[in-house]
Image (cartoon, rainbow, N blue to C red; front, top):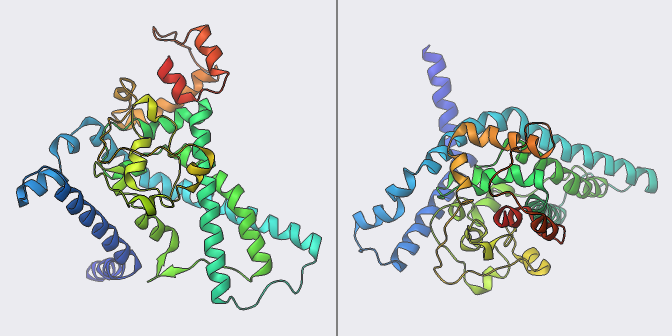
Amino acid sequence: MTDLAATMMDAVSKRLIGPTGVAAALLLLSVVVSAIIVFLRSDESRTLPGLLRFVTPIAILTHASARADFSFWISRKFVMLLVVLPTGASITIACGYASHAALAAVLGDGGHASERQTVPFTILFTIAMLLAYDVSYYLYHNLQHRVPVLWELHKVHHSAEVMVGTTKDRIHPIDDLMNRIWDGLITGPIYGFWLFFAFDPVEITVLGINIYVLRNIIMMDFVRHTHLKVSFGNLINKVILCPHYHQLHHSANPKHFDKNFGLMLSIWDRIFGTLHKPEPDESFAFGLGSESEEYRSTFGLYVLPLRKIGRLLGLGRVEVLPHAATPAQFGTAQLGITSRQKDHVA
């Protein structure tokens, strides 16, 4: 028993002082610095109790939506570990090797790959993969708002009425799995290309931290799913999607629907005309209106999307709701209205 305890303690200590611990420290630092900066810009009294009230607002942390967030976050960890992560990784690798085989069939399998990966190759490969993942995310996120079945799954994320950090992981496992499969289909060929020309390419790590974990820290993925309205300034916002821009994406105001789809880069929203700049210190109401009340439980977050998809596909009893869309409204939907806009019109 003593040996087991010692082994467990050793494993925990290695994680705390290794790359995982460094990443956690950087994440915590980003949250603390963001909270202090936003607090100093607020009207709260400049006292420690005032700071604590501002950073940990009781009304938000005890909200039914937040409680659902916390329980969903814990249960989802097991699903991700057992199903989503392995499947997503295997799709990317499979597409990569398929692309490699296609290139080998056309160009011949010899003399193209370098036996030793150089620093320039590593940097270029990392940039290529980051860009591929970023544009892949933008395209899929746009589809999530336009395709009814995908929107029903994505509603889990948008149903959050308050933002508490863990809201970033308020994503239905099937939605996450489909997103990773899509990513694999987009990024797999990029990986295959580099696999053909650069022997067994790997991305850069910084202090042992995976580049994608570092990306999430830089773009403040945790902070962007809180009430902290952080902007990087006009210049950086032209390239990086700051937390305040993403908070607008969650807004329940129809004028903000289907805006700011990006992951890390704001350039795709700028290119495709979906960028919307919030007013300085603009506040937002989040959620899906009264429909959000249906998603205030872990059970609802997992099961409700499947029931609604079943109804969409005619697999279950279709309820005619009092607010059902009229034929004229369905006509509008055929002209390009997105699934979220259609929900609002209905």
